[in-house]
Length: 338
Image 1 (tube, rainbow, N blue to C red):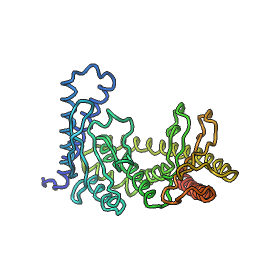
Image 2 (cartoon, rainbow, N blue to C red; image 1 turned 135 degrees about the vertical axis):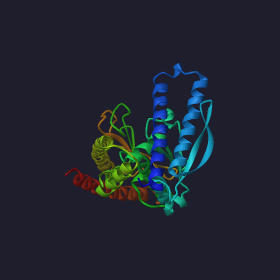
Image 3 (cartoon, rainbow, N blue to C red; image 1 turned 60 degrees about the vertical axis):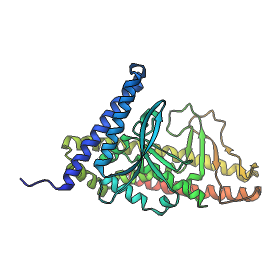
Image 4 (cartoon, rainbow, N blue to C red; image 1 turned 180 degrees about the horizontal axis):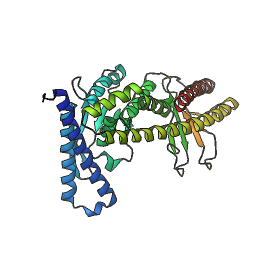
């Protein structure tokens, strides 16, 4: 029998490390969140240390370079990892290398941090922190990325790139912030930045691209996953796609209505300007959970000074631009739903 190629051995090693990291992390996080008082301090520290070690093993197996940073979960010390890609590494490592090559990534010094106990802090799969220009992710992000069922890292990196446009004085949907009722269970009901349109439609392009899916499936096959596994992953991916479509449809509907109302108000009267910034425009009384109650437009590095007429003009121009972008995303989403 012919010896397996180095690349195939590499993939199998990566998968073994990934599975171990994922299972141990999930088992502990689920048990801890269900009843944290069932654990002694020594047991908690031991598990956090074990998960950190397994995360390091996975990064070494996948060819991802990293820098360790000592941090704390409450009073428990452990290490988080700043990540860097390698051309000769795994698919995920090569993806990180490609991201790092982007001019905006270098210019804005955007960072990706893998936190082994991320799910003890956050319910989301990942998030972007504008203040530190850091995308924070947990171990499961890499599991789902490997399986091709979620694009959380890509999603948050897109937020980072869109945020960077504000400091460069460029137009972006990240300039628009919507607020609504915290009582609604809908995703993004209480707070939404409009670049979610960009991130979700980009997610859908990745998750529905036949060429990408074929490449992922081949990678999974080479990694030793069974036909039953592949079928399960396909079902999982389909669920992610349908959920993303639903979220996008909701954002399109609510943001279009709110921006249309905001434009009408802005055309009717000059904005209230404080320290060179116009106050949020309230478009409903907040009692209707299906609507956004306010719209805020960030004109930083587009307009200077407190000239109300100039700010009014720029706000209306920005809304017109955003409405066109919403229409473009809606058209693309409709084509994906056929």
